[in-house]
Image (tube, rainbow, N blue to C red; front, top):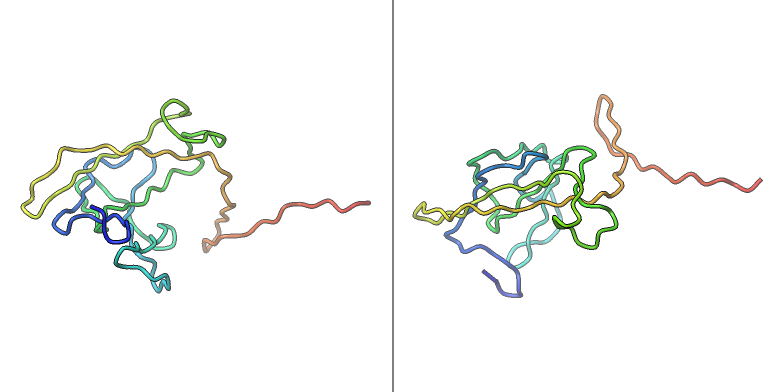
Amino acid sequence: TTGEGGGTEAAPDLSFAVVTPPTSGALYQCVPPQGGSTPCGGTKACPCCMPDDCGLTPLAAADAVEDATGRVLYKPDDDFFNCPTKAKECSAAVAVGESVSFVYEVRDADSRRSPPATAEVWVKNEPDYPYLRGPREFDAEVFQEVRLPA
């Protein structure tokens, strides 16, 4: 449904569930970041905490989606993409590699279920930021090499 201000929200008596998780990558709950200062609520959705920052576990078949609007996060496998960088829009027509999708359903307060629906996931081939691993995981900013004139 469409809420005040044009925001999308699920009817209060509907919920979502994963029927079949993706075969590549993983789905995670969309939960607000801990201690976040971004105002949300009403027609403004809260941002989702990223899986690496929140220690979330992947959703499995039959798991309920906790976000009232049905939002989930998809995290692809390392170095995975199925849409070229220069594509204006991703679709099967421009796909490279395997197609990724997951199946979900909508449930009402009386436990009636919708027919399963499939959501396709497209991941563009964008440069990843370096991720260094050590005794403690951390992000590092890398600067571009600049040659000084001789």
